[in-house]
Image (cartoon, rainbow, N blue to C red; front, side, top):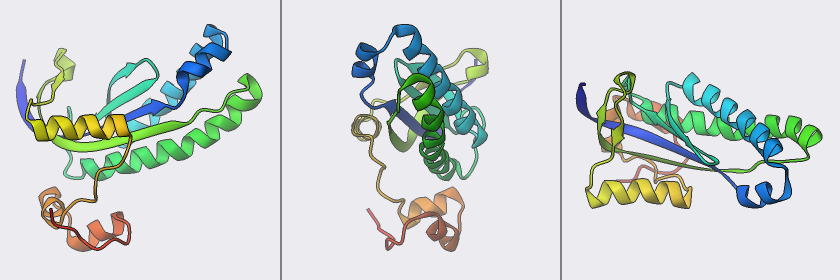
Length: 177
């Protein structure tokens, strides 16, 4: 199995208040609702080049940069997360009248270096045990907050021009860390 060190972007999307949802509704109904959400998540994330690494309970974890690496994986991940958030509103329009349920989702995104095997060969993603990278991934997932905008140096690493990157960021001034 081939193993490589890569910089990837991880998207972690977690359904809000899924425990009370499970307590209020029949398990088969909850399974149907979550299946619709998982199908939507996979469709959106894969459209932008993400690989759904796993579904865990009510959460989806996708990786951008494995197995295929793109120079704009971080941007793709952000766009996929934004579309997933918007597509959930459409899905809720279908779920509410059919199942009496509206889903909310928290999405965490982070970029860092990983050591990965080839998923086509049964490989897995292994996040290095460096305190900085591991804590950043955990924080993004558990707090479900977007990391700070990329620095100009990170933008150059992605191969974007400064003007392209500013179009993809908010109106914030560039920040160096």
